[in-house]
Image 1 (cartoon, rainbow, N blue to C red):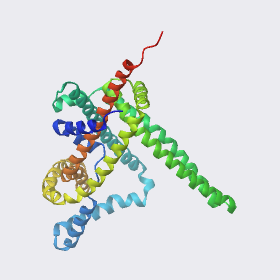
Image 2 (tube, rainbow, N blue to C red; image 1 turned 90 degrees about the horizontal axis):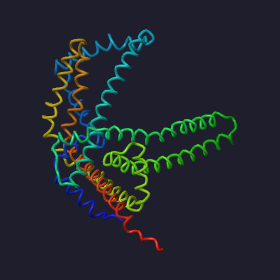
Image 3 (cartoon, one colour; image 1 turned 45 degrees about the horizontal axis):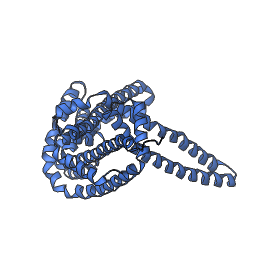
Length: 365
């Protein structure tokens, strides 16, 4: 068995002693979607407050008139005669699809390069005590291992696709049962569908837990040992199989820490409300920069108020990133701590596997 206390303590020490890792932790928190998604309540309150003073603000009345006029001229004909604008709908759909693909690719690159960099930087720090700069860490992450890590995630997500046709089949079973004139068939089909649904949910949860745990070893096999995707699956599975007790205990420990982290983040979110108020002005300034850039570019081709809407859409991600920067930083710390724990666990298990053959008894002649 590995020393769990030693690993947790060392992971915490690395987190606080290796400040460059914080940058990658923030990038992982932003691109990995591990942070909370607040903000909806504040925006709604601001809208209501502005609406109460709308009659005393001529600029708001003018903007509302422009918005209504633009809606009647551009949107209402599309809704009334959609068959006449099929080409426009296709163009808008393709443009949105292209935009989403570009954003997804950029976020994926940042995420996998950052995750690879964190694992390699911590491993190098444990081996030689060397701390590298951000640019050096980015170079360590910019490698084929980051792409193989993406392939590992893609392959491990494929088993979940089988649940789509299963759920569709359950839906059809319920539909035919409800529409059937045979009440006995209706009752049996609904009961069978509900039972099979809960069975599928249970299998889904167990499979998700298993793959999430195995992934921690798959990706470290490809990052630390430069293994191919197939070898990473094989090495990761063999390591878990040889050390399944240590793996299970560590997973339970991290599960408990994760639950405590989720509770703490809920409390911290409300405790930081005064900080959000202080960061409101910087968030508006930072968000205004990309918003005005998008507004300036789109105003060449489009008319108001669509230009303002697009500018607002471009500004909101930057606005919320600055506004909730403390939460993002704390989320980054937790992501780094968890990554450090599993990297050190992998190293410890690898060392035990290398020592084990030397302790085997010699054959007796």
